[in-house]
Length: 225
Image: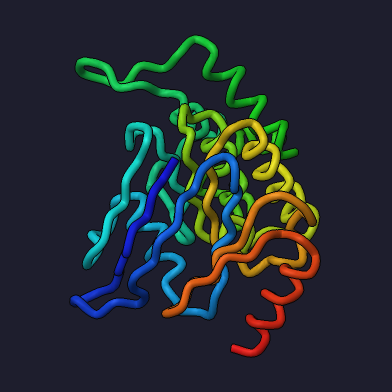
Protein backbone atom coordinates (compact mmCIF):
# COMPACT_ATOMS: atom_id res chain seq x y z
CA UNK A 1 0.00 0.00 0.00
CA UNK A 2 1.17 3.51 -0.88
CA UNK A 3 -0.62 6.53 0.57
CA UNK A 4 -0.17 9.94 -1.07
CA UNK A 5 -1.54 12.93 0.84
CA UNK A 6 -1.67 16.55 -0.38
CA UNK A 7 1.45 15.97 -2.45
CA UNK A 8 3.17 18.79 -4.32
CA UNK A 9 6.16 18.01 -6.52
CA UNK A 10 8.24 20.29 -8.70
CA UNK A 11 11.59 21.91 -9.25
CA UNK A 12 13.13 25.06 -7.75
CA UNK A 13 10.11 25.17 -5.42
CA UNK A 14 7.75 25.56 -8.40
CA UNK A 15 5.20 22.72 -8.36
CA UNK A 16 4.19 20.88 -11.51
CA UNK A 17 1.19 19.63 -9.55
CA UNK A 18 -0.06 20.11 -6.01
CA UNK A 19 -2.56 18.74 -3.48
CA UNK A 20 -2.52 15.27 -5.04
CA UNK A 21 -4.00 12.57 -2.80
CA UNK A 22 -4.59 8.89 -3.58
CA UNK A 23 -3.84 5.37 -2.38
CA UNK A 24 -2.30 2.60 -4.46
CA UNK A 25 -2.46 -1.10 -3.67
CA UNK A 26 -2.93 -4.42 -5.42
CA UNK A 27 -6.69 -3.74 -5.28
CA UNK A 28 -6.60 -0.81 -7.74
CA UNK A 29 -3.39 -1.79 -9.54
CA UNK A 30 -2.15 -1.15 -12.13
CA UNK A 31 -2.60 2.61 -11.83
CA UNK A 32 -1.94 4.23 -15.19
CA UNK A 33 -0.76 7.83 -15.06
CA UNK A 34 -2.20 9.90 -17.90
CA UNK A 35 -1.89 13.57 -18.77
CA UNK A 36 -0.26 16.06 -21.11
CA UNK A 37 3.50 16.22 -21.54
CA UNK A 38 5.00 18.06 -18.58
CA UNK A 39 2.04 17.39 -16.30
CA UNK A 40 4.24 15.68 -13.71
CA UNK A 41 3.81 11.96 -14.39
CA UNK A 42 7.54 11.24 -14.33
CA UNK A 43 8.02 13.59 -11.37
CA UNK A 44 5.37 11.72 -9.39
CA UNK A 45 7.07 8.37 -10.05
CA UNK A 46 10.47 9.80 -9.09
CA UNK A 47 9.03 11.20 -5.86
CA UNK A 48 7.52 7.83 -4.91
CA UNK A 49 10.82 6.11 -5.77
CA UNK A 50 12.66 8.60 -3.55
CA UNK A 51 14.74 10.30 -6.25
CA UNK A 52 13.25 13.77 -5.74
CA UNK A 53 11.98 15.38 -2.57
CA UNK A 54 8.36 16.61 -2.54
CA UNK A 55 7.74 20.31 -1.99
CA UNK A 56 5.02 19.38 0.47
CA UNK A 57 2.71 16.51 1.40
CA UNK A 58 3.31 12.90 2.40
CA UNK A 59 4.25 9.62 0.76
CA UNK A 60 3.76 6.67 3.11
CA UNK A 61 4.51 2.98 2.54
CA UNK A 62 2.92 0.04 4.28
CA UNK A 63 5.99 -2.08 3.44
CA UNK A 64 9.72 -1.30 3.45
CA UNK A 65 11.01 0.99 0.72
CA UNK A 66 13.52 -1.68 -0.32
CA UNK A 67 10.54 -3.45 -1.86
CA UNK A 68 10.40 -1.00 -4.78
CA UNK A 69 11.47 -1.84 -8.33
CA UNK A 70 12.02 1.19 -10.56
CA UNK A 71 12.18 1.40 -14.37
CA UNK A 72 12.94 4.95 -15.56
CA UNK A 73 12.10 6.26 -19.01
CA UNK A 74 15.75 6.69 -20.02
CA UNK A 75 18.26 4.29 -18.51
CA UNK A 76 21.54 2.87 -19.71
CA UNK A 77 24.45 1.27 -17.90
CA UNK A 78 28.13 1.41 -18.82
CA UNK A 79 28.50 -2.29 -18.03
CA UNK A 80 29.39 -4.49 -20.99
CA UNK A 81 28.17 -7.89 -19.84
CA UNK A 82 25.97 -10.68 -21.19
CA UNK A 83 22.25 -10.01 -20.90
CA UNK A 84 21.71 -13.05 -18.67
CA UNK A 85 24.28 -11.75 -16.17
CA UNK A 86 22.61 -8.33 -16.16
CA UNK A 87 19.20 -9.87 -15.42
CA UNK A 88 20.78 -12.01 -12.67
CA UNK A 89 21.89 -8.83 -10.92
CA UNK A 90 18.24 -8.30 -10.01
CA UNK A 91 18.36 -11.48 -7.92
CA UNK A 92 21.35 -10.39 -5.84
CA UNK A 93 21.05 -9.62 -2.13
CA UNK A 94 23.33 -7.35 -0.06
CA UNK A 95 26.15 -9.20 1.69
CA UNK A 96 28.72 -8.16 4.30
CA UNK A 97 31.26 -7.11 1.66
CA UNK A 98 29.83 -8.09 -1.73
CA UNK A 99 26.35 -8.82 -3.03
CA UNK A 100 25.24 -12.45 -2.87
CA UNK A 101 23.76 -14.21 -5.90
CA UNK A 102 21.29 -17.04 -5.10
CA UNK A 103 21.93 -20.45 -6.62
CA UNK A 104 18.72 -20.28 -8.68
CA UNK A 105 19.53 -16.85 -10.17
CA UNK A 106 20.43 -18.16 -13.64
CA UNK A 107 17.31 -20.32 -13.88
CA UNK A 108 15.06 -17.55 -12.57
CA UNK A 109 16.58 -15.02 -14.97
CA UNK A 110 16.24 -17.28 -18.00
CA UNK A 111 12.61 -17.89 -17.08
CA UNK A 112 12.07 -14.10 -17.05
CA UNK A 113 13.65 -13.73 -20.50
CA UNK A 114 11.47 -16.55 -21.83
CA UNK A 115 8.36 -14.94 -20.34
CA UNK A 116 9.08 -11.87 -22.44
CA UNK A 117 10.03 -13.89 -25.53
CA UNK A 118 13.63 -12.63 -25.57
CA UNK A 119 15.56 -15.70 -24.43
CA UNK A 120 17.62 -15.44 -27.66
CA UNK A 121 19.25 -12.32 -26.16
CA UNK A 122 20.66 -14.21 -23.15
CA UNK A 123 24.26 -14.31 -24.43
CA UNK A 124 24.18 -10.99 -26.25
CA UNK A 125 26.26 -8.14 -24.83
CA UNK A 126 24.30 -5.32 -23.21
CA UNK A 127 26.06 -2.68 -25.34
CA UNK A 128 24.75 -4.37 -28.52
CA UNK A 129 21.06 -4.04 -27.62
CA UNK A 130 18.63 -1.82 -29.48
CA UNK A 131 16.45 0.58 -27.50
CA UNK A 132 13.51 -1.81 -27.53
CA UNK A 133 15.64 -4.82 -26.60
CA UNK A 134 17.16 -2.90 -23.71
CA UNK A 135 13.69 -1.96 -22.43
CA UNK A 136 12.64 -5.62 -22.46
CA UNK A 137 15.86 -6.74 -20.73
CA UNK A 138 15.27 -4.17 -17.96
CA UNK A 139 11.73 -5.51 -17.62
CA UNK A 140 13.16 -9.03 -17.23
CA UNK A 141 15.39 -7.77 -14.42
CA UNK A 142 12.31 -6.31 -12.69
CA UNK A 143 10.63 -9.71 -12.88
CA UNK A 144 13.38 -11.37 -10.84
CA UNK A 145 13.55 -8.68 -8.14
CA UNK A 146 11.96 -9.27 -4.76
CA UNK A 147 9.76 -6.16 -4.89
CA UNK A 148 6.05 -5.71 -4.19
CA UNK A 149 5.91 -2.23 -5.70
CA UNK A 150 6.73 -1.56 -9.35
CA UNK A 151 7.15 1.96 -10.74
CA UNK A 152 7.54 2.23 -14.52
CA UNK A 153 7.95 5.36 -16.64
CA UNK A 154 6.90 4.75 -20.27
CA UNK A 155 7.89 1.04 -20.21
CA UNK A 156 6.60 0.36 -23.75
CA UNK A 157 7.76 3.53 -25.52
CA UNK A 158 10.44 1.84 -27.67
CA UNK A 159 8.66 -1.46 -28.27
CA UNK A 160 6.98 -2.86 -31.37
CA UNK A 161 3.22 -3.52 -31.25
CA UNK A 162 3.54 -7.19 -30.30
CA UNK A 163 5.85 -6.51 -27.39
CA UNK A 164 3.77 -3.54 -26.21
CA UNK A 165 0.84 -5.90 -25.70
CA UNK A 166 3.02 -8.61 -24.16
CA UNK A 167 4.54 -6.25 -21.59
CA UNK A 168 1.25 -4.59 -20.67
CA UNK A 169 -0.51 -7.96 -20.32
CA UNK A 170 2.38 -9.11 -18.13
CA UNK A 171 1.95 -6.05 -15.88
CA UNK A 172 -1.75 -6.86 -15.48
CA UNK A 173 -0.86 -10.46 -14.57
CA UNK A 174 1.65 -9.27 -11.96
CA UNK A 175 -0.98 -6.93 -10.49
CA UNK A 176 -3.41 -9.83 -10.19
CA UNK A 177 -0.64 -11.71 -8.37
CA UNK A 178 -0.43 -9.00 -5.70
CA UNK A 179 1.98 -6.40 -7.09
CA UNK A 180 1.25 -2.70 -6.63
CA UNK A 181 2.07 -1.20 -10.02
CA UNK A 182 2.09 2.45 -11.09
CA UNK A 183 3.09 3.31 -14.63
CA UNK A 184 2.99 6.17 -17.07
CA UNK A 185 2.23 5.48 -20.72
CA UNK A 186 0.92 7.07 -23.89
CA UNK A 187 0.09 3.62 -25.29
CA UNK A 188 -3.53 3.63 -24.08
CA UNK A 189 -4.88 1.72 -27.14
CA UNK A 190 -2.69 -1.28 -26.20
CA UNK A 191 -3.83 -1.58 -22.57
CA UNK A 192 -5.94 -4.54 -21.46
CA UNK A 193 -9.60 -3.55 -21.51
CA UNK A 194 -10.40 -4.43 -17.91
CA UNK A 195 -8.74 -4.10 -14.52
CA UNK A 196 -6.63 -1.30 -13.19
CA UNK A 197 -7.44 2.40 -13.02
CA UNK A 198 -6.31 5.72 -14.47
CA UNK A 199 -5.04 8.79 -12.66
CA UNK A 200 -5.27 11.97 -14.75
CA UNK A 201 -2.35 14.05 -13.50
CA UNK A 202 -3.00 17.81 -13.62
CA UNK A 203 -3.69 20.75 -11.35
CA UNK A 204 -7.06 19.05 -10.86
CA UNK A 205 -6.24 15.31 -10.60
CA UNK A 206 -9.02 12.90 -11.48
CA UNK A 207 -9.47 9.11 -11.28
CA UNK A 208 -11.08 6.99 -14.00
CA UNK A 209 -11.81 3.27 -13.94
CA UNK A 210 -10.87 1.02 -16.87
CA UNK A 211 -14.52 0.50 -17.76
CA UNK A 212 -15.31 1.31 -21.43
CA UNK A 213 -17.25 4.53 -20.85
CA UNK A 214 -14.79 6.02 -18.37
CA UNK A 215 -11.82 5.01 -20.51
CA UNK A 216 -13.48 6.71 -23.49
CA UNK A 217 -14.06 9.85 -21.41
CA UNK A 218 -10.39 9.91 -20.40
CA UNK A 219 -9.19 9.54 -23.99
CA UNK A 220 -11.47 12.40 -25.06
CA UNK A 221 -10.09 14.51 -22.23
CA UNK A 222 -6.53 13.81 -23.37
CA UNK A 223 -7.39 14.59 -26.99
CA UNK A 224 -8.74 17.99 -25.94
CA UNK A 225 -5.60 19.04 -24.03
